[in-house]
Image 1: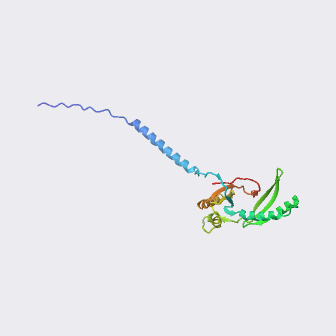
Image 2: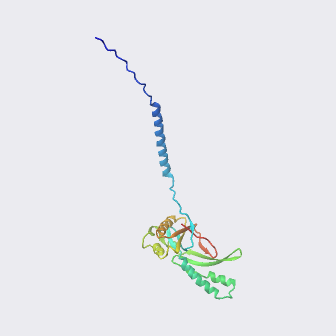
Image 3: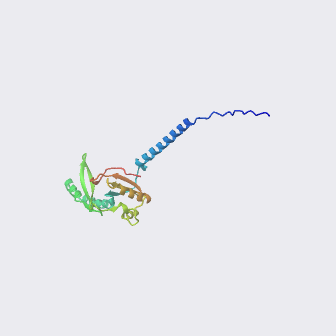
Length: 219
């Protein structure tokens, strides 16, 4: 009886995966580090808000002041009507001398809901310039920014009587009142108004000048 011979089995050489595992481990570690760095950067970085492009407007302008996070209409249109009446009375006397005219101009006084309005005559480069000064009557006047969006708010009632096709809104914004400005701007935009604004330093007076020729830009 023949005994079968056992043939040795040939084994394929085994692959060493240590190098591959090292590369994979390093790659995963780098990815985790990148994710942690991105999350920490996003946590401490301020959000960027796209600023609308400013453009010029030829509409009539209705002015507000944002002070102590309260919105106050200047009611400059009413003051302008009172000033026009005062100027017509002054020009009725063609023989008035310059000193008398200046005294009559500076005697003007008009009161809106929140401001005392006065006139002054100054000279710049030899040219007379008429200034209109708006002085706050009540430091706590106006309306809090937290109530601007309410349908019955004074701010809503004020802009509801204006037409967005004829008027743009411009805000003088004090350093402590950007929350108020953003809230008022949101309401104005939803109502279809173009909105402009100008930063106003604390304590700086609101003064309009004749012949200034200043262009108003809105967003």
